[in-house]
Image (cartoon, helix red, strand yellow):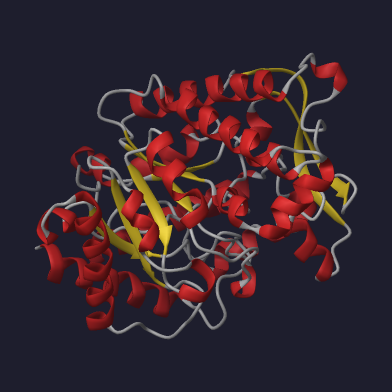
Length: 400
């Protein structure tokens, strides 16, 4: 199966100054889960979305996204809108989180003493769509024949669970007695959200799960060992949860998973390491068709060798263009790297290079602004659009 788009991008875009100014009161880390959004901010978000959609249409950038302009951070606006969850804006670092959890460890090194999270305090349920309003805001700027060219991102169902100290993702009062029960009900909410968005015309959804790369991090694995957590069982639980949310997905809805190693302000990444440790399970035991993987930096992300585990019928979007560095990549070098990746797949699957190329696409390695406050070092909107045009150019020269 070919990817949904030959030139893709991961979703988030640098916020324009006017939008950042409008959202200034919501920019602190403790406010990332706030549901009290002033109408003036919503108006600024809608106008910013309108403008960024127009640029994507003019430039022929695909897929068309809203840049995640209505979110403080890529995972915002989901868990806190489900029934049974409560935002906790100032949980203490490190006590409230997994031992040696890479994100909170690095945040502590930066001086942070607290971190916001969303904790389950009651029966989890789906009463309203977390992201329907975002999709409608994007959709209203597109003719109906281009709805299928748009994409929306959602956070992983395990986002809150993986970071919080074992047995604290849900309270005793919530009624949950096991991680599996808790995640099963979250998966049901995700399944309901997929149907809601599909019924409203959305056809492409990307699930952002950078934390799965933590299972290739010695710091995370050793921290789990200190906590008495079986990481093999935990990874199995997480892959099952992903598959449960996908089990009843509507026909024609394209679903992909994005995995990176962190992409915070100032080009910060949380972990390093190849996909090698998780690739076989990722490609063969999760039911996604598309995997968005970063390959812009071999020191951080490793080489293409893990692609040998990709089975026929699935596809990979190669994140070759960096959102962490302002320097513009060389198009010829990028094309050569696509062919290197295709050769790994061709050799492993026993197919010719053209058939292997058919299951590939190209993109930036991550979003340009996973957090609304800033992007990579030296990155600005001019460079961002240059990089997106470069991705389009590379794809056109390989596949058109």
